[in-house]
Length: 162
Image (cartoon, rainbow, N blue to C red; front, side, top):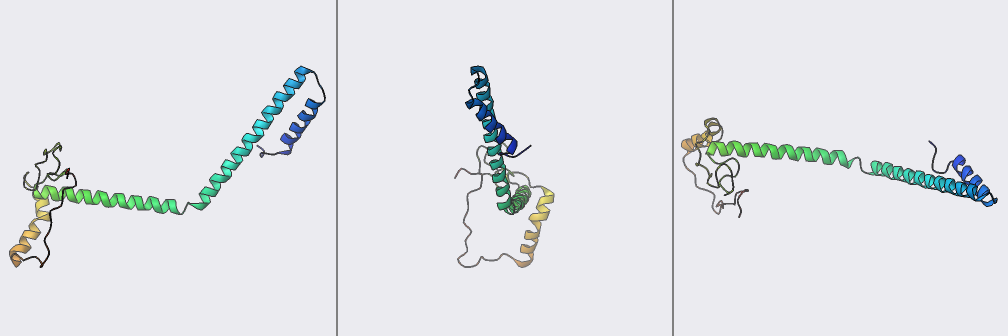
């Protein structure tokens, strides 16, 4: 397929214009005018397609380095969120809390908002993994006082309406 201003298309348009102005019969003039209009529209469409392809090519050359980096960042963040969600679920099971809302969502299907730590029986394997090491260390070293000025403030649960 040729470009938007090929010699054959331009020559055909010029020839049709000459025929149109030569004073042919009305039927021939209408036919020539219709053909000329179609050819001109075809030429405009080719030019528009060519410009569109050129713009896409320029866009491809300007931003391809960002796209792979952005995709890699999104994948990395997705893995991190998934990992944190798995840890939060395992810790909730170790503490006997609702893994969906930790007791902060009255609309929760599992606990209706009552699933704070201790609401369910803890999962033994998760308890051994997360909680037992803390209890063992505390038994060895005794209870410690928190640093002066450090007081953990309760934060609303992510699923809570507060």
